[in-house]
Image (cartoon, rainbow, N blue to C red):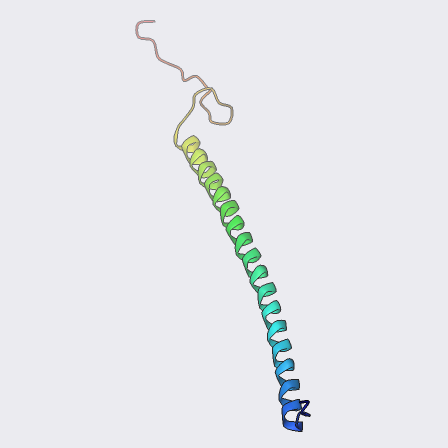
Length: 92
């Protein structure tokens, strides 16, 4: 028995297919967005690692520079340490 679908049933089926297609497109777009967000988060972690490395290098260089300024190393040019101070000799 072939019954013809009423106008309402045809429209309902048509709209159901459109909704299903829309949800499939939405799901696909959401998956693409999720992949992009994961890539961005991964890159952010990489930048944090690089920033941490540069910060460690900066701290090391700053502390090294301060140590050199605090310590007088005899014999290093530019520090004045290479100039031998005259010592007075008693009885000479």
